[in-house]
Image (cartoon, rainbow, N blue to C red; front, side):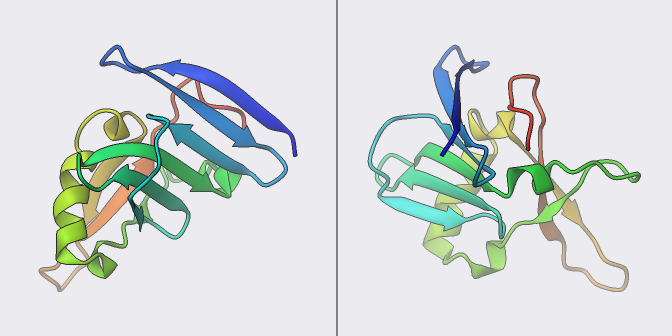
Length: 136
């Protein structure tokens, strides 16, 4: 297993780091080295681990990282957040975390409003800062 590791300086002055497993094509961004007491599948390929008591994000895993960043002729790729599958108590913890640093430095939230419906579908786009590894 070939791991690429790099330290990241966040906009709030804190340090995080990533570990990229090139063979498995998994990027894990680690915000705090602690045991996760909560985890949620944000999308089919993005997992958030967090501390249930403090509501602090601990890490973000991006599975099939190169596919998530695959270029297309239409612009940014948006992924549907699996918010409908989250229990209310999880949703109440996750939304505030997604809207602030450090998660907001890596994920951009948006919504999709299909025609003929009043339901907005929550979406996320992966921000591609210069400090991310080049996917395989």
